[in-house]
Image (cartoon, rainbow, N blue to C red; front, side):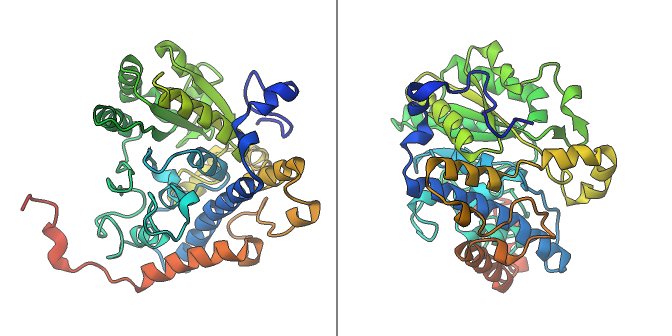
Length: 374
């Protein structure tokens, strides 16, 4: 894993001049504290749903983003409202964190509400998908969220189409896609990246390198150490971010976003992280057998919440005493309590969960809706 005192890039900043050029240095204190809050929101979403499942109040498979929250919070924060995102199964918080800078409770922001996202998880009427599926199989054209699928990397061609469409319509938007490192071995990944490179489409591909493609370790996925090197064959930037550091993720993704928005084409950003649990909760027991417990312990030592707090202290935006509040870092979902999170974070998720539980299941007569064109 990347050491705590540096980024995961080969050319980490040196000297005051270089540091001043980092996008994160242009963030205000309020911005930086908001980024920490977004990491907390992503973590509590994960924790709360795991607890709801154990209470028997939730069915279906859960795909945990535990220990990978900095990737979501850091990559989304630099987007403009009209930019597009294409999340995958491990990115559920992205649906409600998109355009969160416009206000989480702002009905006009370009992101889904927590009620909609929780409604999707519970398969209720309030969900955008009207309970046709649960988890991440949703999207919103009006909110600029590309509908996710189970075919990882399969949304990159769609992202290329969206980027080209916006270009033809005079919209200077960027499309951000999320993909596991295992998906980079698929043919469709390379075909789509090639199209984006040839046509200089502003598609930023996030590679969430959490060290495991289901049960396959990275050394059996790719011959090189860095998946960002996939970019070299297409003549596009391949950046590497410390996926545990929300500010480093923000830096690298902002570089890629500005590259695309300026008309220079696509980029790949590899975020090095570690998957805390199994591929899904159905895989937790099996994962305990195919992964060495010491590897898991080491992989979870750099908690994104703890790393963010350390960076805030270094920036002078948080005191040591303040950093000791809401100590969710280093704890599993079962160990976390509501007191480990800021009260407004707990209330936000509570609102979504309660709305989902109160929402009815769609009427049976809806079964044929969207199957045939009216």
